[in-house]
Image (cartoon, rainbow, N blue to C red; front, side, top):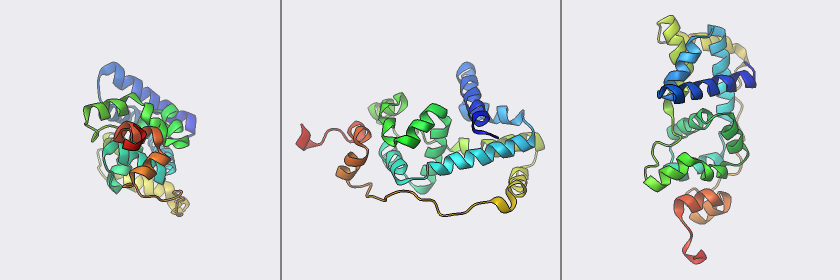
Length: 192
């Protein structure tokens, strides 16, 4: 599945969810369940590639600020949430995670002090397997098919996450993610 087709699936699910007032992940599963098994596997492969591209320290730092902390598992969910935002936001975050300071959901979550749910979207990670289960009736069918689909091409190379830094150091977070840090942490006392 090429990139355009992948993003068309995401955007169609986003539009369908907004129109029907349903959750994005449920609409996404339905859209995928209407496709051939091969297309679902191709979707999953593209999803994994895009998900892996976000596996960087600066993106993790953004997740940490937005969520008030971010475990390994939460970071998996955060990256799925960024993909669920659609192509435009995905590309913006990939280029500069600090841009999330301008996203209305992030701003609202900070204002509400309820940061635990925004962009941390676990169920998006399982859309392909959910669609496969709907069309096969078998819970493990997706994983078996995916393993056969990937075969020897599976690439487990070490990912370059960029420069590691201390997420607990507010001054470092302000230096690397200035807009997001200001939104979440406020203005430092010495700048007032």
